[in-house]
Structures are given as C-alpha cells and as structure tokens.
Image (cartoon, rainbow, N blue to C red; front, side, top):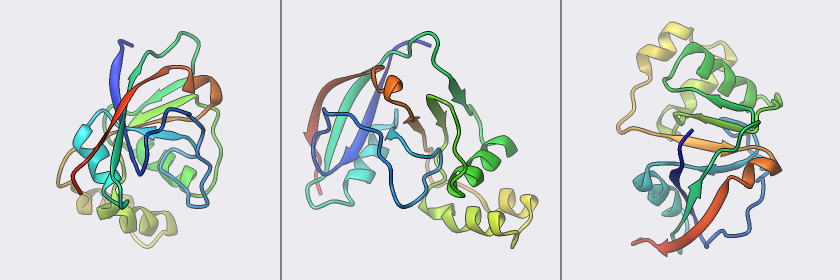
Length: 154
C-alpha cells in the first residue's frame, strides 16, 4: 500500500499516539482514528472549543493485518455491529466508510433486530463521503509520522 496522508480531528495536536479505549463502542473497535478526508477531520474537530486537525503521513509496513472495506457491504455492516457490541478483533488496521451520526440509529436498529438488512440499506444514504482508518494495535501506530497540526475555524 503506498504512502498516504491522513488527518485526525480533536481539541489539541496529537503527536503522542495512543490507542484510544473509549467507553462508547466505535465502528472498528478501540484504536486511533484518522481519515483521508481533511474536511471530515475538521468536522470531528469542531465538536471541541478549540478545533485542531493533526496531520500524518502513513506507511503501512509489511506483516500488518489490514482489513480494508473498499465499499459498504454486508461484511462491513456485520463487522461494525460486532465491534459496537464489544466483540474484539485481531486486525492491526481497519479501513472503510464511517457509519456517521446520521445513520447511527439505523445501525443500532439493525443490531437490535428492529429493521432488516434490506431496510437498513434502503435507509442508509450519506450526505457526503466518509472514510476512517483505525490503527488498532501499538505496532500499527508506528506506521504514522506526525507532520504537524492546524487550528481550524470554529
């Protein structure tokens, strides 16, 4: 996989990389989340009083277990449901579309059995493209080189 540039939105520059373990379950489990879409990182950062986007170059090393969902599929949906239920996985890096806030309830409804898989796909439409790359292990963090950070307009 060639080198890519990724962005992380938050409230401060993040040069000291750590796996974020949260009390809320994320799409791809615990990890350090970035995106190749700068505007998306800016939206993430605007949740904070001081919005900051950190910038990294990524070189994915040989031997890492990378799970890539190039499109939203049933496998992508099932993986997100499992992660949100707290099911652990052994992948170093997971890449794919983000189940954004707009469809968060649809994921929960599907996971709870309130809607069918077909109903989920019919209701799920993004307003804009999304992307996330989760660095899920300490060794995957070594793929990231901190370039710098920028304060965004609030």
